[in-house]
Length: 62
Image 1 (tube, helix red, strand yellow):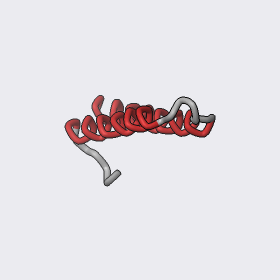
Image 2: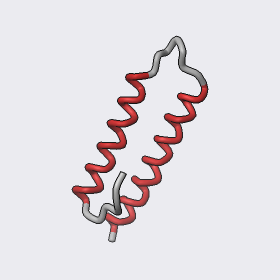
Image 3: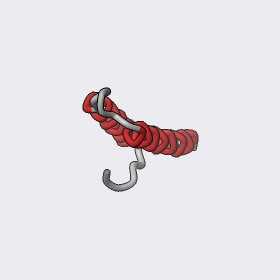
């Protein structure tokens, strides 16, 4: 998804794009055919977003 984000605007844009990716994935899942793999992938994406939020929180406090 690109290089490092050093300013708040770029960091927020990054997070918005990641959340949009999660929403797109959620919308594309067929509930009748979805399995554990889809849930695991969503959890991985959310974990990645959480990690970035923590990193950005640290950057913003400096």
